[in-house]
Length: 441
Image (cartoon, rainbow, N blue to C red; front, side, top):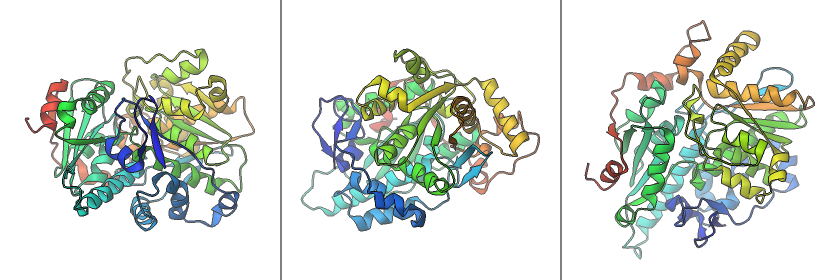
């Protein structure tokens, strides 16, 4: 499988090089040159397959031949070491819980998969004596609006030959999220940026294009712009379908959307033949895509800080991939995607109602996914909507405690980091980031 740049001004490249580079030389995101539907026999037998077997069939066409099948199965086994349960909310809405991993966020899958792919490539390069010019250490450079940082830090912790640098906006992530990315040490460096997520993301993109850095340091990204972080997110949708297809038709996914990598992976799953009836992009007040689907005018805007901070993105990077899937045909895209936007007050009301009416404790992002599912079903009653619960509610205790009276027990994964010492470097300019990457700070 080759990958091409969506800016169409860079040569095609392999999965390995796409993972290592992260972003194409022409600033474009990488996209697979072809997408082959999975055979009907796969869907006919999906109820009898393990998660590992499903994931292998889903991902193998995109990583072959760079990762041999034996190694790929090992990577998948190490990645999928937790559950992905579907929980019924009512007769027409379910929750797909993606928070049962080590950092209790959906990004654990992509981060673990990518870290193991990169580790395999590094080890292979070190074994190749003909590549004496190979840079032996890779720096993973990532911006986070919330959960990405902790998932990446955990996924890459202690991986030989990998140094991780995480940028996060000061004061705009939850206490738990900050602890998860600033307390691990070892090969993890946290940079606390005086700004918003888009400032962090802009710095990361600038670094990838700075020859004074890339000539000296091998850098790659672990944001969902990286194909190895983005593509494994397809697994969730297959796991949900496996649990639901015998009981429900017209399955719709309501996806809390910030940088749009997760919902884009859902569309990729649909391209592989997964019978998804429709997708809903659930937005907070950062509603660029909601407005685009109403007006056909895509205008990035400054980030607005909300209670659902992982979705605080004013210019979602992955939306261009969704447009590519639908060949930039607006009406075709609009027929497959609906988007709703909700305020912080509506988010709190949704969390309260889920708890009081359904005995379900949701985080702010899942609560917005639930609202979007309800809104869609007003005009589409003969559907079953699955909203993605993307993080454990205790990661947002300050928000949850505003609407839920009972004390929520902290899971072991959260307790393990709360008493650890925060270690971060405060920066406010690109030059300071550059100094860190070059070892001058």
